[in-house]
Image (cartoon, rainbow, N blue to C red):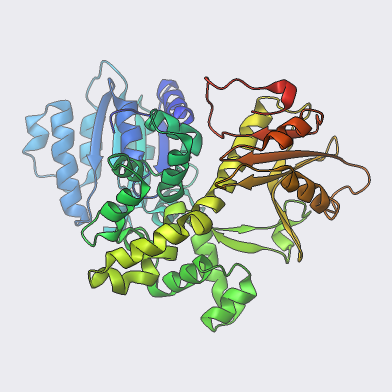
Length: 479
């Protein structure tokens, strides 16, 4: 990928840390392939930087490699050929050097050193306090094992707790930037790509080399030699033990079981036995617990549902994991047929709802309504569900919406059904003002557009990406 897209906020944070007086210690972490190293490379371009990538080798081997990188950095043969038995000597030698510009020291995959020697965070704490803290230097500790980075650098019982001056947990790139990656592709294709790649830069790069979503899936996922064939194992194997238990749990949710009691029944276990696994997967940003947006106490709500938050994980467990026997036996076309039949209804349509809710936040910030909602999510009860529900508690405004990834245009019947559903939403009943939004990948019927022109409380959205060539038809409430 030749272009660096998004990450404006993260670059701004790093630049602010770099320009501050004295020292700064930044913790940067996030899942594999999310673009941490690319972000750092972009940031240190043109700066006086020592970049070291730690390995899963022993601490001694990592220290020797770091010494060589440090010797190259300060151009010191004395350090290069010296027998050094402590990290302190290397850092002190570097910081005793006079620099024209503020140095940046990056230790990528920091957690591997702590994994080989659990005492290393304490060693680095001492180095920070005695050698780095009072110098003009910026240090970035970066890692891809989320649980390990948190335990080694951020948790209360970590020796480095309280030392950081900033922290960045790098997330996937939002859908709104996909048009910058592929400016010549229509939005429908971008949504298809996002539904599987989920904003992970490396996945985007791989899929962008293919003609369409199905050829990308066949080449990168269904091929046992493909880059993404076994990706969930790589993501989880170093984060958790009992990987089989986690796989069974995710598989159950991918199959459509979202209630805790239902998941427990499918797995033939007690609900209390799942608590640890669910919390871990939520902490890893793989799962999320969702409640109706109208709930006053989400944490205590008994209406919570579990869903897979990561698009690629959702796809893999829905279409790949259950069909491994076909793939391993060379019958990938059977799996591809299943994907062609179910990708839209079981994957893309649900991801499209997430995209629309993301777009709602953008519209909210741009002043689409004469109020600003503060919460958005879904609403459901035992009889029905609504894709979008946004609340403005101060002004008692409620926005309800539907998102349709259909072949045909959306008609007036969908709006009428939504209005009927709104009568059963209990939030501020009798006192609120209700507004409506409809998103449709294939537009709307002329009848609906004509009707909506007389309804200022209804807005229609054809596209979820910014499109300068398509002006907002405000008089008809159609975008």
